[in-house]
Amino acid sequence: MATTSKKIQSALLPIASGIIILAIWNLISYLYGRSVGYDVQRIIIPFPHQIATALWSEREALWLSTRQTALSAVIGFIAAVTVGYILSMLLASAVWVKKALYPWILVLQMTPVVVLAPIFVLWMGQGLPSITAITFMIGFFPVVANTTMGLVSTDRNLLDLFEMSNASKAQEIMYLRVPFAMPYFLTGMKIAGTLAPIGAIAGDLFAGSSQGGVGGIGYMVILYNSQLKIPELFATALVACMLGFVFVGCVNWLHWYLLKDWHESARKTDNT
Amino acid sequence: MTTKSNNIPMVQLTQAHKRFGETTVLEDINFQASKGEFISLVGPSGCGKSTLLKIIAGLHSLSEGEVVVDGMNPKNAREEMAFIFQEANLLPWKRVQQNTELPLKLRGESTERRVETARKMLELVNLSHALDKFPWQLSGGMRMRVSIARALTLAPRVLLLDEPFGALDEMTRDNLNEDLLRIHARDQWTAFFVTHSAAEAVFLSNKVVVLSANPGRISQVIEIDLPKERNAELREDPAYLNYVAKVSNAIRTVH
Ligand SMILES: Nc1ncnc2c1ncn2[C@@H]1O[C@H](COP(=O)(O)OP(=O)(O)O)[C@@H](O)[C@H]1O
Ligand SMILES: [Mg+2]
Image (cartoon, protein in one colour):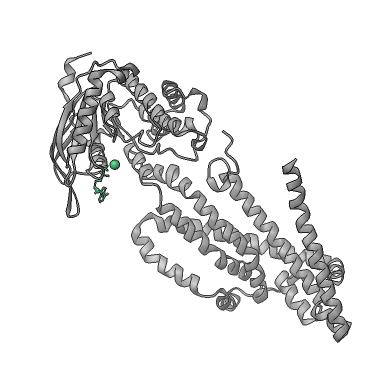
């Protein structure tokens, strides 16, 4: 009984607070509109229902642009995870490799992507290649940092165990270092997953285009803004937020799925 | 039980010294263990017990002197040795069965042999019911049993145990000690067993080596002249209790 009422509570509370927030928003829009006029209010702080209407009437354009951004985010994310993983293996393979390469990876990471973005556009032109490159740049460092940490911090006693068994270097990597580093890698992957949609939208701001009639979310932001379609802009923010949720949800699920059997971070209960 | 092979040294240390950088950890260790002997190592913490085991295992090399295992350099005798660590040291992402198979898998044995051997060893340590469990689902004592089963899969001739039961409660520890003796009586490996407990050392061993600290030296070797067949009843035997007092005293007064 107690758990059921708790469940109901945790479902109802966010809905209740959401209604309150909407009501306050409505009130502010109304008061603002009364003092400066409703045409100004519409492009500064639109009513929630105006945003909803914009969302509905622009649904087709928003759906297409979301798909475009999701595509960039997925490609950039997969590139970041793959390249990041390979790079980590390389960095962890010998101390001198890490000493030689890590400072330059840091330099790359410290250079703000917004500064690099125009250079990418210069090299690769407007469109998908530049956008995914920007997404990649934002996502790959957390993967490298975390995975490398996991690969070099393998438990000393487990390494001794493998040495006692005369394990080859390949066996040590395959059966020990890689699985041991898995939770670290997945943590990096989660961060990359949170950043990927943001990277894709940021990339779109610099390199978005409506070639073939399809621009991404970032492109729509620029478009609506320049046309003073502010309720549509708010609707776009809503859509971007939902894309982020879906993306992070998928990545978190993958994290949970791969670790659920054995790792603390993915285990909910001890049922022995 | 006495056979003529009893006098061939399985493990022999001659004037062994070990330094880490400037500090001498082990000094002038001379010792030999014959086939089937059960040797306990006791002494203050930091005196070099783990280091000594790792030297025999070939995980550390000596700074001076010589160590020979079954007539070979330890690194070449790896196939005959197994190491049991203080933590059970299992792969957390593998089930009990796969954890037990690990040494055989690393050695490239066929799946059939691996599965069969692991099953047998798990049966020996009374874990047949837990083949599909992950390490986190087991108690500390069960985890240690898996660790023992894993070490036994390669039919070692030398078993090195570094405070294997130090983290367990007394009853679990007593049970595991009895199981260990039962398996030892069957397989007759040579054991080096590090412990902090005088009672445990006396119960298991035919010899207790007391080490002193800074640097670690052999301060005393106490022969435990108790019958070979031992069981829980021994724990009330006055002769046994006498030995425990003697070893406790030796540990306390060592410096
Ligand atoms: N790999 C190592 N490098 C440097 N010093 C070490 C290393 N391993 C152990 N030592 C030092 O050697 C001494 C003995 O350690 P150890 O053999 O673990 O002692 P014990 O097992 O008896 O508690 C300690 O002072 C420890 O700090
Ligand atoms: Mg130790």
